[in-house]
Image (tube, rainbow, N blue to C red; front, side, top):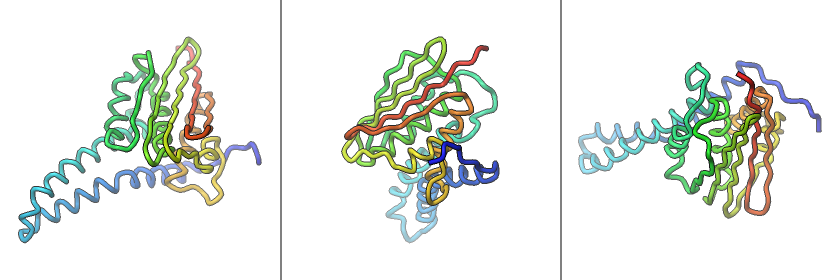
Length: 219
């Protein structure tokens, strides 16, 4: 297999990332539309309380996903800087607190560079996908004078490392071409390499491991 990295035009990359964002938001937005239709139907007044619950839950989910994806796949604001780890935890908890996987943190860092935070959010997305039946995800963040190291271990029944994910993380093109699913790991690898960092993924029994090491550049 060639060691060259796949090339995408800026317009193709933007379109594929937009497709991924739309895929993640369609469920809560669609549920909001259904709830509003029920509320506007006077013949279904007995379902209005359920519809209001759906409005509250769906709007909360949509807001949590927008906040998460704004940083993970977007600029999250153009200014560089450090993002507090508590804020990162809040974004991840908002996105996945009701999912099947339990998140466990191991970090002494108070905050990390925004670009490292983007990589961490993206790796969390991949870790959650690696345990579709649920399980435990341990997130470790370590910093020293030279680099930031991110380690995620996703353990659960039927844990899996999709071949397309592993391939696109390393910058390769998937066999069937890019789509909204495979563009996200490709983008994760892309921003890691642009920072001069390295990225790896592996599986051992029922644990999928993701590791990223990003050098800290002098101020």
